[in-house]
View 1: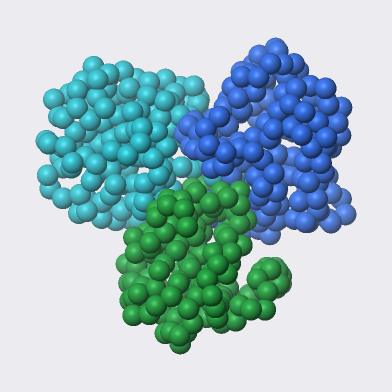
View 2: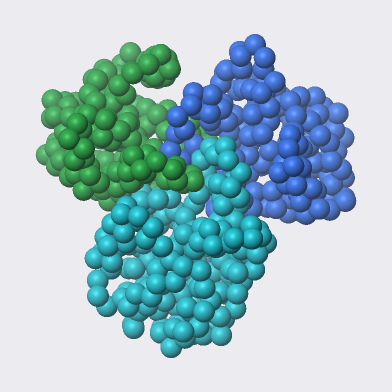
Length: 179
Length: 179
Length: 179
């Protein structure tokens, strides 16, 4: 059973950097599962910046939708970091041509990832975003995305040993105390 | 004087479920004051889901604007839960044809609810939303709503014995320590 | 070296009032550096309200972009409060005709303010906003603003002795414990 840490927070709150530091505190090898789809130049720039920041000893795996499969393929890697769950949820909704991706199915996919982690040993660091603390946007799709992202966070937090909320680059320990 | 707990957090952060659990920890009967107006199918679906989740032992009272009156009518009910204040504030602005619903009047209406609670005994659980931690929307009405919602939260938190911020389904105790 | 307190939180979360209380706990004189540009009636109204709330013993300095300079000119004032950093970042982007105001340059400008504070004594209270916990807006400029605001907060929080997150008017101590 992997030890799970969920690192949540707003955008530019230092989530990724904190997750990398937590991961590097354990002996490697280290795998970094990147869920970002690099749709445009802005996202490519963000991806490039993140890659530079984490250095070469993190092996990058790009996986936009099948997180459970990607984790299965890294069963022997002691430290696995997923960055981030919110983009993964976004990808699930985006690739869902039939429009059937509901909150419950996102919860199911989240539990599938947890089931794989339960069969492995080592550490699993999950980076995610707080998206529900602003004024709700007017369009239904954005609200559905927010519901799915929030539900995913709840499922993961429930199974995690440690949950951290990042505020201005600093950790607030929500579950599991200091590391 | 009712013991007041304010449960705040983003959308899909587990506020309602936590509030129900807190309420069920006390002997009933239990009253659930629902402020949601059920304007469209999406909201009806949310209401239906919430009703299912809380089970039949919560008696539902629907009240969109007169929360103080609704609480007065449930004076003898030991556990009253309001879900949620942010929709109530939204309703106050929506029903205000004269456009005079200011932040100060929302504060006044909030204090009117607290005044009723001060004359009763038992528990009052107030569910509300964090709405101010995103990028401010461009239109003035949305900002005014955000100001009113934030002000309501401050008035209620100031009077509450316990204030809880929900993060990914987990409580962060902001005031009053663990239950 | 000034003792730095960073007070963050959503809009209408009680940040300014808490910062004023913290500042008034120390002997004066007190300087209040206001960064708000008063572009329209709504902002003028907010500025007027804030001015009333803080009372006459706070001397107001209006400075929209050169915070380091404004702090230099108040070197002998023992208590300086800046309200707020997020509007300052907004002003930096707004006044940047060349479109070169990047996240890194905002970080640099933030460090310039800290360098001035390091040469002075007394207290520096910095009010800022959480802007990254909602659903990301669709336009790139708003996202760039959010990135810059978040980066500024990280730089300031890293140097601050105390970091406080305001929730419904109540402080959550993220760094440095209770005052």
